[in-house]
Every structure is written in structure tokens, then in C-alpha cells.
Length: 74
Image (cartoon, rainbow, N blue to C red; front, side, top):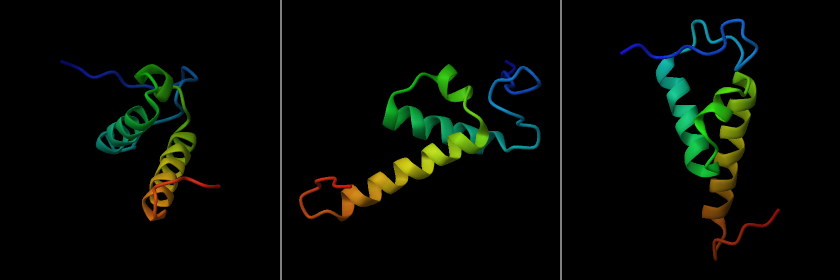
């Protein structure tokens, strides 16, 4: 079974040539797990934007885990 490759000149997801497939799967799974976004929407994000969302989710998790009552405050 061949996997689809996104971002090859179709304007979706940016260029992924040379980007490790396991890292892509990790980013997509991470965002899908926390935000419940569908696969196709996550794949439409540019690589930098996907990484930024992963960083933001991680920051939220760190903040929530540091709060004494797990209350998130900005």
C-alpha cells in the first residue's frame, strides 16, 4: 500500500521533500489528539504552522500541569 505524499506543488501543506515521514505523523497525531482536527485539515497547514501549533499545545500542557489546581490562566 502506497502512502499519499502531500505538498508537491499542489499548494497544500508546503513542501515536504526531505522531511522525515515519522516526524510528520507525530505532528499530525499530536494536533489531531489535542484539537480533534481532521487529518485533511492538519495536512493543509504549512510545515511551520503545524510545528507552531505543536509548540503552543505543548506550552498549554506545561502550564496546566504546573498549576496547583490544574486551572489554566493566561
